[in-house]
Image (cartoon, rainbow, N blue to C red; front, side, top):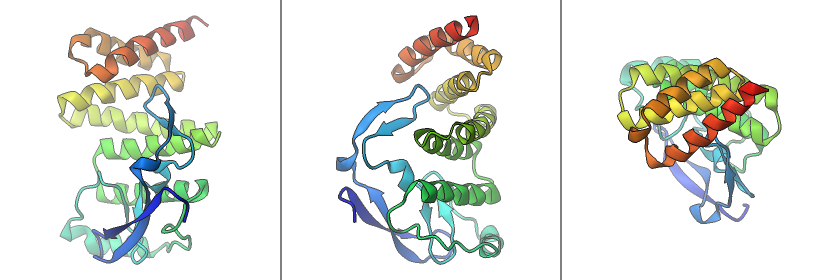
Length: 219
């Protein structure tokens, strides 16, 4: 096992099986910067590769943000997952390909369970980051578009004042990255109008990326 990884015991929320999956030790994280859309870059191990837990028995995939599995959806979800068994080993060390497949399985489970739009948005955003760090722009942009759509839905349906500003910022910045400048300007304007209410971590980011957007619109 690569140094910096450890085996965490997980109990599957769907079938109850216990299994071990690898996670990155906090002490082993080597941050190498953060992109303006809050996508972290690391030297060495990337925790995004290990974020999704996948049960080796029923193949239920989830992250810590998922809601509990309701009793009335258990059997149907098991049947759905049994249609496509996973031949890959998600319980050892993960490379880029396994990381991508893990998010695909998590999205499948999340859509079946009708997880919150913010959860779906983060899954798509994380997957876009995985593609970005591997230099796959087309796939990155595909999942950034999905993320924007889910974040917009979450902004209108999930009431959390602090989280709402983060969602608004992500919608603005991801739209800028996708060159949807009209939408980006609309959301950055909203944030600037509410600048006195923004969490500290967003104040500088909003100002900096608003300037970036204005420069790009001139080009």
